Amino acid sequence: MNPLNHLKQELEEKHYTCVIGNEENILFTSKDKGVKPLLDFFQSDEYKKHTNIYVADKIIGKGAAFLLIAMSVKGLYTPIISESAQDLLFKHHTDVISGKVVPYIKNRTGDGRCPIESSVVNEDDIEKALQKINQTLEKLRNNALNNN
Image 1 (tube, rainbow, N blue to C red):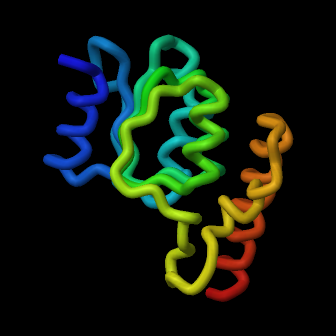
Image 2 (cartoon, rainbow, N blue to C red):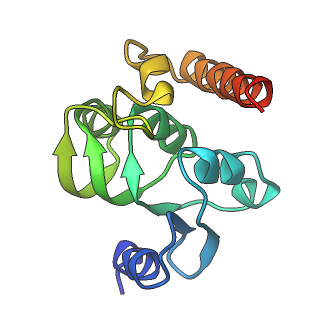
C-alpha cells in the first residue's frame, strides 16, 4: 500500500489531526491542533532516526509546509492546504495530495489569517521561517498565560 494512502486512512478513521510514517510503519500520531504535532515530531529523537518520511495532516499552511521541508518529507496528504503552502512544497519537490486549496489558513476564531502562517507569509528562507514560527508560538503562549 502507498504510504500516503495508509496514513490518510489512519488520519480519517481514528480522527487524528496528524499521522507521520515511513514506508513500513506509523511513527507518530496526534490529535493536537495547529503546527504542534509537526513541531513535536521535528524536535523528537524519533524524527532523527528515520528517512523517507510521509505525513497526513488535517490542515497545512505555509508554516507547517516549512516544517515539512525541514524534515525532508517525501509526500503529504492533506484535505486543506493554503496556496502559499502548496507553492512552497512544489518548489521543494514534495509530493502533495490535497483536497481543497484555500487562499490562506484561517485562525481559530475564523476572523483572520492563522498567526503561524502570518509569521512566515513573506519568508522564503527555511531557517528564518523556523525561527519566526518559534517566536510566534512563544508570543501565543505568553498571551494565553497573561489572559488566564
